[in-house]
Length: 550
Image 1 (tube, rainbow, N blue to C red):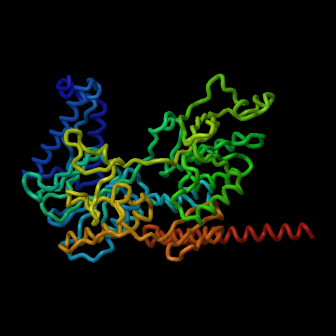
Image 2: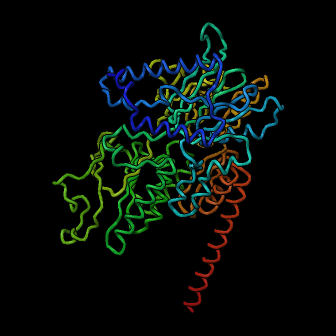
Image 3: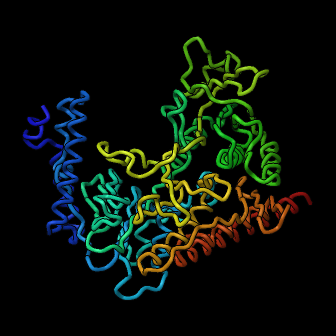
C-alpha cells in the first residue's frame, strides 16, 4: 500500500508543497541544491530515515491516506545553500530570549574578517515576544508592537537571516565516537516543515547549532484542560484571552451578572494574571485562583509574596489553595446554572448566552472537602514541556540526551553533552547549579545564558577556551496591575519595592532588557508619552473634583 501510494499521482498536499518550494525559490534565490558527494550522502541518509518513519506509520495502521500525503519535499528535502561555505555557520532554532539574544550577541562581538559566522535564526512566529509583559496587553498598558516587534524590524541592521518556519526534525551527527571518530565532517542538519534542510556544518568545524526552542503549555495532564482551558504563554494566547474577555464584557454590559474567571496555578504567572484580571473586571467579575500548594508563589521572596497577597485580597480574588483540578468539563443537564451560581430562577432567562465550564477540585491533603466551581473562562498556567522529544527521528531516538522533562542535558559551557557543536539554553537546557538542581526556566536565566552562549560560540570558532556559565540571581519582579508591582533586588537583603514604585522600577528594568537600542528608544518615548497623558488626565480629574466640591 505504501509503494502504491508513493507511486500515485500527486495529491493536493504534494502540489501545495511544490508551490511552496517555488515560492521559497522566488523569495530566497540563495536556496539551491547543494552539490558534492558529501551533500548527496547526507541527503540519502535523511531520505532513508524518512522512509523508515513512513514505513513504520503504514505498519502501525496509518493506512494509505497518510502515505498519500507524503510530500515531495519530505521525500527529497531542499537543501539551504549557505552563501559562503568557507565561513563559519550558526543555525539558531527559536527566537525567544535565548535564541534572539544569542544572535544579537554574536552580531555585537568583534570578529576577524574570515571568522564572522553566517547566522540563520528560525522561529515559527514572525514576532519576538517579550513574555514577562504579556499581562500588560490585558490591562491595556502597552501596545502589541512594543512587546512583540517583528523579527524583520529587529534584525534589519544585522546580517542575521530569519526564517519563519517550524522545526520538524533534528538530525545531529556530531556526537562523540560517531564512525569511530571524535569529530565529524558534518555536524548534522535541521529539517523544517516547509521541506527546507539546513546543514549547520559541512566543510569546516567552526559551525554550530543552538537549541533555544522554548517550551509550550502542558495541557494533557488533566482531562478537559486541552479542550476548555486557555494557556497564557504566547502572543496568540494573550490575544485569545483578551478577545474572550472583551466578548464576555460586552455580553454582560448593563446586566447584574458577574464574569467568573478561574486561574489554575498560583506561581508567578498565575498570580500576575489573577491580579491583572481582577483589576480589569473590578466589580463586574470574580477571579478564583487555584493552587495545589497551600501558599502562592512558594519559591518567591517573602516580600514579593506578602505584597501579592495584599493586592489579591484588596481586589477580592478568591484563593483556593491546597486543591488540584481533577477535570474540566461542560455542565451536565442535571447541573442547573442556578445551583452552581446561586442565581434566582426568575433571572435565568436574562443570563447571557455563552459557554460555561465546570472545574472539579480535589483536595491535596486530608481533612478538606472536594469542590465544584463554575467559570466562564479558564486560564491554565501550570506546567510546560519542551518540544525536543518530538523532534528526534523515530528510527534513531535519544541521540540528544534529555532529562525527564525533555530538556537537553548540558555541560557548564552550555554545550549538549556528547555534542560539541550543539548548544542549548533557556527552556531547552537542563543545566544544573552547584547544588545539582536544574536552573529555573525564567527570562532572567535565558537572558544570561544567551550572553554566555554568544561568547562561547565566539570562543569555539576562534579557538579560545569556553567559559563556564554561572547564574547570577539579580532579584525577582512581578506585575500586579496598571499601577502595582513588586520587585526584590538581590543586591539589597530584605528590600522590597512595591506599589507604584515597584511598578515603575519593573518597567524600567524591562525597558533596558528590550532587544535593540532602536526598539528601546521607540518604546521609551511611547511609554513616556503615555505617562505624561495619564498624569495630565489625573490632574484634570482632581481639579474637576475640587472645583465641583467648592
